[in-house]
Length: 144
Image (cartoon, rainbow, N blue to C red):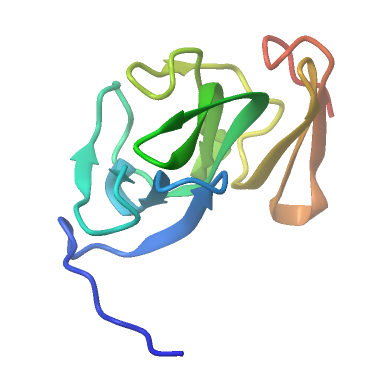
């Protein structure tokens, strides 16, 4: 196998990649940078469509609901629900596939390093100093 360098639309550090088995990938990193590709990394678009402080985004997660369709010989999932987390308790939610993001109150002011949902309304964040927070409301309320 060979790795090929891809062109990037940023020179800032990127921290996390997320994909759901399709040509769509998300990359997140410094200064609130969110990058998206819909062609398996050939072209990346830089996006900051929300009022985010110039902080580090440390993780991105989208819930795949299982709805899939074929587009030009490729399976495409209808992915709408997603989260971005980062430093100082940063927590954002999207319900439209990342077109817009809304800030949510998190259960900590420390860095949130990861986020995952195990059911549509049940999820967890993890982070600095061993914090674990959970939600049973789809992210509306987070509890330590």
